[in-house]
Image (cartoon, rainbow, N blue to C red):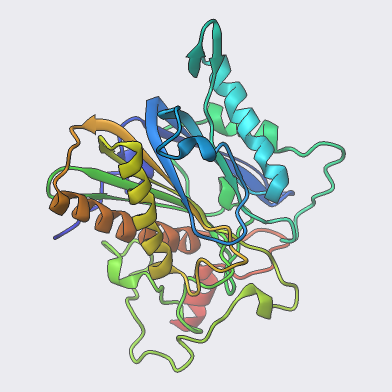
Length: 339
């Protein structure tokens, strides 16, 4: 099975999806909104031990609501859950949402990561800024999307480097498109030992995150467990992500796709899914292509979900850019020293 990148190498290669970001540089935090037009089937898989979420119960296959209008990823820990209200307000202003009699209720599941101790100014007064950031992000949604130190990835960090917002896409031989987006803020590391090489290197396409491959020989400390707990000023964690496809899936199939995409976390981050991460994947099916995949085709889809997610995570770290007050080096700084 061979994979190729989509034209944008982004989540928005999946038809029906747009993405918008909003961030506050002094806050060192932000929001990413993923809008679905029309509403899309969605599910979620949570495998980290410290998640923070809104409206995820309705995504379970046995529950009634079948589609969502948007998803929201935010920094700010529990304060960031307010961002979904801003996305919801933007959708309501657009006249988009679940119609219940004369009422319109936009369905916006959300997840947050912890970036409160990253050097940004969090003295925001009585109410946090995340609702307004969510509104701005939703109103800015387009197919063209920035990556790196933007949106929910603005203040993200790994154990060793600055994190960020990454995306990637894959087009299967069947023509099915898979896209991934990740706000990368793990307890662990995306790079191998002290090198600039990414754990996700075997899945890289066309040098999209540096083209360094795996280190040769593998460093002696490659498998040493390096986490934010080792730092002088420990920071908190969580990688939150979206996997999407244009093939029609049921909620149960979307749930399985979200589970499969977590393999991309394991391929790109060491360690991952720890008790101190809130690792989460939303899965979205826009249904532009017929479903009812046979087992072999669904297996290919799940494998693509994992590899695409691994690439998106690596690209989030690779594309991070420096800012005043950062507590971590950017990948580009490490790469310049290593080469």
